Image 1 (cartoon, rainbow, N blue to C red):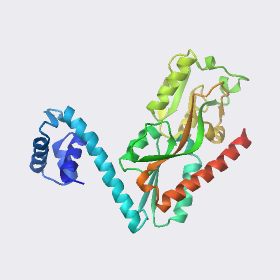
Image 2 (cartoon, one colour):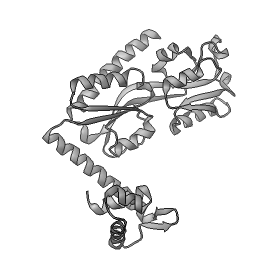
Image 3 (cartoon, rainbow, N blue to C red):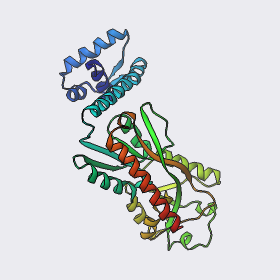
Image 4 (tube, rainbow, N blue to C red):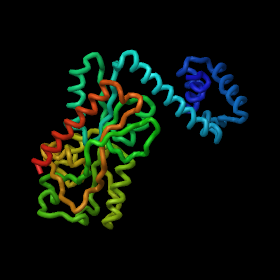
Length: 304
């Protein structure tokens, strides 16, 4: 990619000339000259120089949008050209949302590792709203999670599961022992949540509003699904997680509350860059995902 745009992107993202110069291997005076040359070329200031660092001007923000698209097309072009030559990835990076934690994502990685022994696999557990920007930016190759996200250029999706975000409580709690539950029974309860996902928080707030409940009171936020289950066990706290992890919740002593309506129902699946669609590892990953999801649906329907 053009060196001037690389320099501009580094300064725009880091907001500091020294840090940006270190990142791209230039001296600070050379980087300063590059930014000034760009500003001369565009005929306007791209940054406001402040004591807090380099802040994008209105023109700079506009150039950032176009530069990121150029960067994305350049990266995807490299990926597609690499496919012509080899088609094997040295590393395959996956981020999985809550519905895929317990079985699907680990089983996917395990099976892929057998079929592509020359590839190193990295599995993160992260909600889609946080992972999709990293997929677009090239930090991830595959995201498993909600498809209820803005569509970004160059990103393709494949539906895998329909997910209900359910409410779980300790089996020995008051709600856990109740024969029937109404939404009003959730009023003024304390919640443990898995990560701080802005989309999930918005859905919880909407659920509370629709059922005339106070806003959810979050007492704990944990970045491990099983750890959040254990934090709820032995308490009157509530937590929310996908219905497809019900078996794991029950193993931790939790119970899924049967409410008239789930907190949130959404389509979930695989998101990936279009430039990776023809890589053998991506094709196989999508095929295995459909197979694992089918097996999971059968087990889940039997459990219910």
